[in-house]
Image (tube, rainbow, N blue to C red; front, top):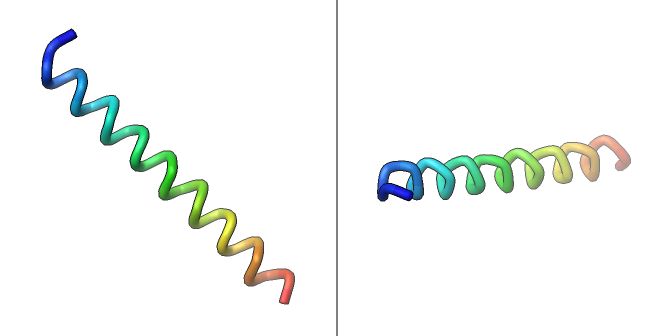
Length: 32
């Protein structure tokens, strides 16, 4: 696996985590 692919996977993982966190926070906010 090349370095470019590696960084792309890492970025995608980070983005996924951010989206999950954002969704979690919005759900929390809407409950209050």
